[in-house]
Length: 325
Image (cartoon, rainbow, N blue to C red; front, side, top):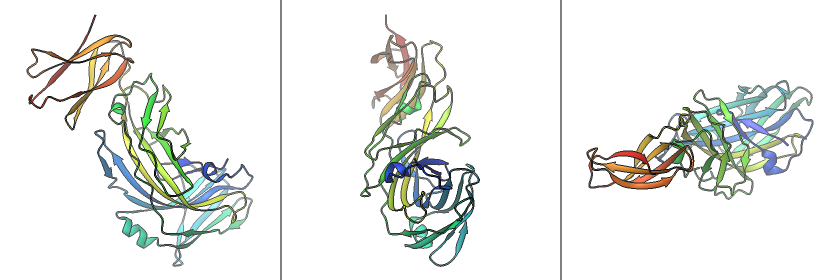
């Protein structure tokens, strides 16, 4: 199956999943151009435009081996040429041009024919043309259970839930991957069907006492080309992606304690570390005495998270957790 692994995040998706390309002996796997918009989701659920690189135009070539493509360039409809450089993943070459506004990106890269020239190891030099048309971005990816993702038990599977993709494009796909604090990808489960709305990360992927970044991307293929380069596939893609934080709790030692408290829109949330299956009561007080019951729960795991509505009559609220016999 043909696979593309491109972009400044180094994340990818299977174009063959969309377009039905079979495995082949060509030097190049996939090639194309992308118009992309980026968002950042905060731990409290607020969704903001990524002010560092809110919009981006990208041209890419992904080969099967690091020697598959010698060089590549993109010719703009106005005749100017951009050189693609070797990606951190040595099989890929790309050119990326960031913009502050969509209007600036569209002005710099208007509709028209873009020629992507590639000098390959065995297939010679090919120059397929990709027609960039006015296209629609898919809806903005939005993770629904961010609060729970701020207190992850490293010993349990992690459910990621999102609002489904909505796109008028027949060829569309959802992509999900994860990065450590250095920006290195640590888990890439591949792509999901555009109608998907959740994925469960296996236990053990995330390490205790660590922070990670997830990336949820919606890709809509505006047009595709399976003829210009036999055995490879080209595409024009409109994409939106959202990065979101994940926080992993320390390895549980069985001690009962509250972890990572947070407050958002009138609701407190906090992690509880204890023993799976035991019965716990969360109590609150405005003065650290006269404690009152706020919640009773049977621990579903050694570390789990609970939410409690705030009391508007109390200016400050303290919490503690006790085990019930």
